[in-house]
Amino acid sequence: QVQLVESGGGLVQPGGSLTLSCVASGMIVNIYTMGWYRQAPGKQREVVATIHSGGDTIYADSVKGRFTISGNSAKDTVYLEMNSLKPEDTAVYYCYHWGLGQRESWGQGTQVTVSS
Image (tube, rainbow, N blue to C red; front, top):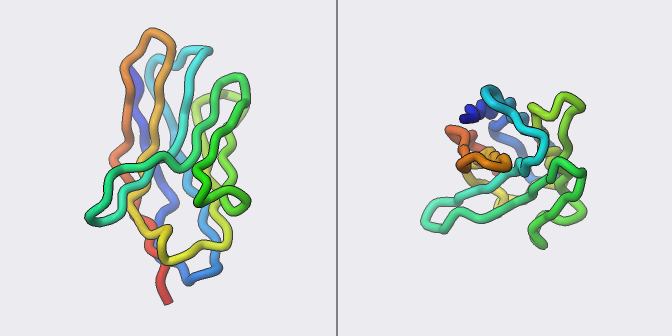
């Protein structure tokens, strides 16, 4: 199916910025959704932002106005630009892909830690 590799996580101070990247390889179809989920310790995995192949985007209320999801023209990479980061954004961030006729795919996760 599709394999996902994330990068860009790390340690940042409150108010700082990070950009996550996720590269997809394998059978890429024209109709798909890619996005980012996150899971903090002791909490369930939650959606952060998604982007559809048609360009539509959806954001969690907690990140609206601070995070921006985007994709490249080859439709094999998705980015998550994170600004004004808060300690409560600390989590493992997972890349997600679903394509028409395919099963869901998940990346291995990248740690984002917001702390002074």
